[in-house]
Image (cartoon, rainbow, N blue to C red):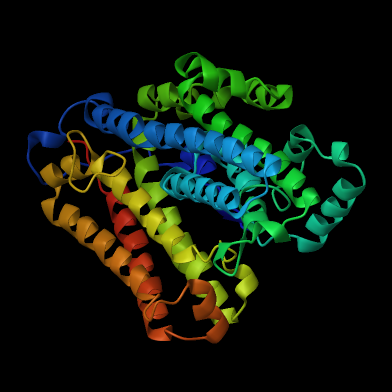
Length: 393
């Protein structure tokens, strides 16, 4: 997720990563070449965490199209609930991807993150689009939506069109212009989700249906073609090729860098900033009141990255955790414990059954907010330790 004006330059930092290594004081589990040491961990991370998450995201986005078209054809409360549920399912998958906001999705690459998940919304601009659509629906197609900046499309625009005050809107309150906007913006969102998946795995490695969706909008295809360094990125990361240019440690460190960045962002940007400023407009996902679940899913994204598999609760073979346990079991336990503490502290922000929107609006649960921010900071710090550790004998 990306707040407008917030610059995350993760991938660009690869060139600055240290190339010299010193020996560890542990056993021979970290002996061997960089490829032998780092390669299996990177492959596990990419194949079992990153790729399945983007595949699930793309598939969930396609279900949004089905649900929203159904709502447009028959505007009932039941169909609106179905559309809202489809939005929520896709939203969860996106938040579960935020521990790896580098490579194709990054700001310095194709900026899919900025296109798909910017906030706060520009409500005046959105209302202007709705006026245009009400006068001429053909003036705003999916292609037009995809050409827009992220503050008038993406997850939070579709959320705004479907939700109010933490629940799906009454179908009777949704205008025809809003339904048209919703389906156009959903097309743009789908293309971004599919683009992320295709960029990672390659067009030849997705289903025929997914390939067909990717090719619906020539501008989307052209965007990937104009960024060849981010094509087949899973292969590039697993082989330390492309922008990695043989820097195996740089590819390996992406796991920790991605975790550090999102832990820091959840604490400082998503939780602390809106609460300290008392500004509900800075609260992410506040139309659906799903913010705390978003933040928890961000930490679960870290958990999957650390344990080497989407949704894993224990270390998988060749995961970062499994490898770290061999070379520094104390640090491995520290990371695992801090992940769980962070999840617990984020949940506690909602003490009393409150959404984060209500917490910020009413300036309540400050003790829990402070504890969650501190837990996120500690989680970011411990992944810095993981990144800066010397692994090669």
